[in-house]
Length: 169
Image (cartoon, rainbow, N blue to C red; front, side):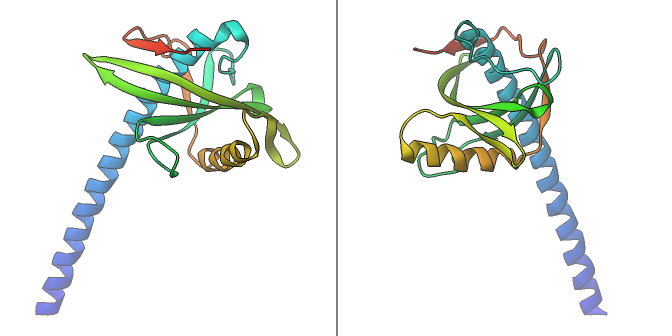
């Protein structure tokens, strides 16, 4: 009987911990969505004039997969990686940006980006910046970000005003 009570208590403890982890995961996902939305807005605002703005998956929508934080040795803790898909997933752009918040405003520092196109095997490089080591890093990063769950950022949500966008060509 004592073992049965211990087992029941352990089971209840596991359920409580699992519930807390699930709730934390949901809060993190919402936070990631908000960070991605602000970043998409800045990318659209600053890179449109040079033809590097995020592609729209459907009219008025961005299909996004995102990672935030340090996932590789060369990443920064405030780095956000966005893979944004074009129409019907025929192309995508991988963006690297950095976020900072001060006085209630989010600043988005736009970093590098790389373009991909679809072929029979999936997304393949179209234009990648840098040399061989950079190409290999971007390909690893794209494969990692591509594993994330996609979400949609409506264009009107991406037009938020409480942000600062920084890009130096």
